[in-house]
Amino acid sequence: MDAPASENSNDRHIDARALRFAMIFPVLLCLGLVGGGLLVAGRLPAGAVLPTGGGALPLPAFLAVAVAVTLGLGAGIGFFGARTTLPRNLRRILLGTAMALQLASTTVFSAALLGQSGLGGAAPVRLDGYVVMMGCGLAAAMGVVLALTFKPDEQWTGADDEALAELLEIEADPTVANDRLFYAIHPRSSVVIMILLAGILPGGVLTVVSPWLLLALALAAGLVVALLSATVHVDRQRLVVKLAGVVPVIAMACTDVEAAVSLDIKARDYGGWGLRKHSGSESFLAFSGAAVVLRDVRGRVVLGAPNLDTADDLAAILNRRAGKRPGQH
Image (cartoon, rainbow, N blue to C red):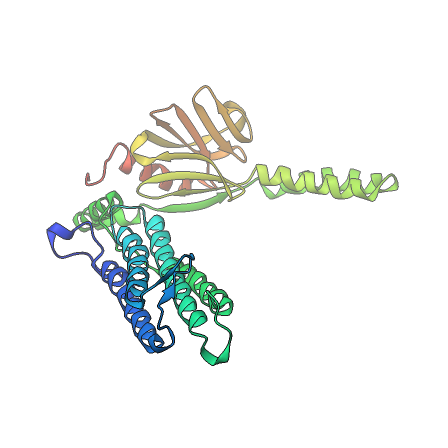
């Protein structure tokens, strides 16, 4: 259910379409409830008892209470669901709750009218249990459906400001649109084979003791390879390194970068293979060779690269974005 932005500045905090739905739907339910009450009025000469019990009320008074409760639950809660100042998920929950409660209210009062009128030759009862069960079940289902399908009114946020600034920057200099890079780093194939053999061969020998040892050592070898592998993704906003392509282990905003340079390094000079964090310095290297050494506001970061060309590209992007806030070129 799309909700267009309000055109009136006085209503800028109200989702107009959601508000109309929240107001009109319970009114229609009440009209149906009143119409049904008038149809069974001839069977209720003494009036009707409220679902909560007590003495019989004249039918107009009974229907007035039913309308007041239904409108209060539906329109009252639904109004807050139309407030765009509330979080999107909370608005979904409020509108879904309003839907469920107003349908349930209509069901309960209708069950009271049907039960006490004795339609179909049944003995009069205060509430028709079958109507309550079926109607409330449908009410709960409809509330969940509305909460899941309602699309709150989109509002302009800080993310939109950043996106607009990015579009303006790309328009001013189309080359910056290419400031994105993704690559994977992993140990050299010979190292991967050595690690796997170091786990599988001893495990094969130890199968005479227990077959589980082979599985455990093979899994341990695979884990070592995963810990030495990562993906690097950089765009105009952030640099993220994910261990095994899944777990973020290094993340920083490009605006925090002061300078970056591509080098041919030895892993032992920067703490060795894998993830290293110490005294403000971070590194992820899978082998000696191409890497990018950068300095940010927190310290030094060293990232491996498949080759020097890729390292050059990463360093160039980081240097272009170094210290730049949205809207800066």
